[in-house]
Amino acid sequence: MKTLQDLKPLIEYLQEIQHLSSAISIFHWDQETYMPPGAGQARAQQLSSLGGLAHDKSVGPEMQRLLSQWVDLKSGEIKGEWDEAPQALLREVWRDYDKATKLPSEYVRRFAKASSISEQVWVEARKKSDFPLFMPHLKTMVDLKKEEIGYIGYKDSPYDALLDAYEPGMTVAQLVPLFAALKQELVPLLEKIVHSPVQPKDDFLRHSYVPEKQLAFGHQVLEAMGFNFNTGRQDLSAHPFTTSFHPTDVRITTRVDEHDLLSSLFSSIHEGGHALYDQGLQADLYGTPLGEARSLGVHESQSRLWENGIGRSKPFWGHFYPILQKTFPEGLRGVDPETFYAAVNTVRPSLIRVEADELTYNLHIMVRFEIERALIEENLPVEELPSLWNEKMGQYLGVVPDSDAHGVLQDIHWSGGAIGYFPTYTLGNLYSVQFLNQAKKEMPGLEGEIAKGNLLPLKKWLNEKIHRWGKQYPTDELVRRVTGEPLNPTYFIQYLKEKFGPIYRVT
Image 1 (cartoon, rainbow, N blue to C red):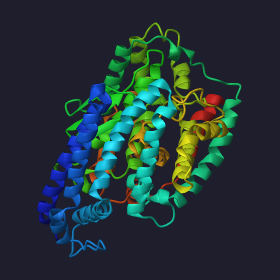
Image 2 (image 1 turned 45 degrees about the vertical axis):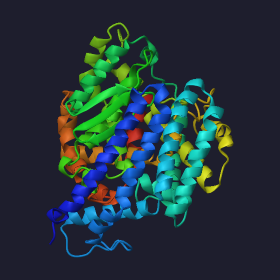
Image 3 (image 1 turned 180 degrees about the vertical axis):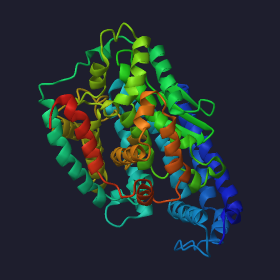
Image 4 (image 1 turned 90 degrees about the vertical axis):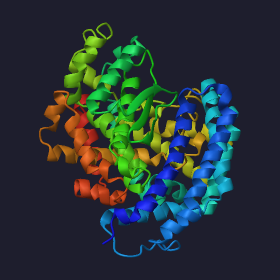
């Protein structure tokens, strides 16, 4: 049986490519945080050059020589007998190689440059709530993704080719019935809640709260979660995100609103969940599939598990609410723990996805999923996006944006060409509840520890069960290994009913 040691030259070469990818990530992080506005064109060219170099190395003669020793480059068949870990590494490396060889280097460079410029224009367009300003760049990104589909190919839906980049193996044929089943449960439950005579008081969340104190409290929660500030940092950005250059260098961002107590906190917890995954990967195998996150759906499961399963739970606030109340005595004077817990879990159809409650969040994703499919499968003109967006928001959530900034311009994803990304958010929600249920089964005293502010047992459980395995197992196999069964949306539906039923006194 061959081991990872036999793949040492390949692993070292993969890590060289990762060094380039990390440099690209640093440039993107800087672009979103500290880069001066006038540097935009130069940065786009830098990203184009680096992206092209990384792509050339990933498909070039040396990669072919190293990989072909162990894998048939045409079929992906692995040669010889291998231990489980190196066999998984070869499987995933070939998968990436096969896809990368289908993309011309010229296209990769062109895409990197266009996406960098597009993201910069999106920031300006969002500030001005000016979709026409962004529209030509979005059209370019959609055209580029269609061009990519032409190179990669697909079996059933062209959208599958894009979805596979974020959630390998997932297809439209699987998502459509899954979303339909969720919609069948979520819409009636939302209807009951909206018309319930019991509506939590939450106006106190919009008092004036000093931003610096909000950030300090979020920092304290991140430390309790186990986020290592020696190998990570937090900054401010227009759209909260996480990026990792190595498990020893993981960056997260948040945004803060003086009149929204929860926005900064929950984006910090959310991105902190992503960061714990990145910090929990095997550092010595970083740059190889065994040192990378399994999929974006699994990655999102970590952020949603922490943000919602923990951050919006009674045990969590049993410990942290007195600290928050002491931090903001004026704004929270007279607000008892039960009132605060209900406010934290208020269900209210809203315009902004990242600020949506747990129940309505997936309806936001369905809006985006359907629009993306229309763009790719039906060639929907980009010019029609704002009106279609508003129509679907009214249909699914009963609210209609009053501006492009609160509507079609609110997310950064399309500006960078990340079409096919949004469904992973819903998959992450489903995985998160199923994982947390299993953690509670295996650690019966977990909620008691959380109520004491001890969040580390959960972090260690996630490190052991999910993080350390990287891409060794396909997503469906990983879910089975962790929970003993495949993805089961019943857990998520039951979780919502058990949480919101008592708050709103609905069945």
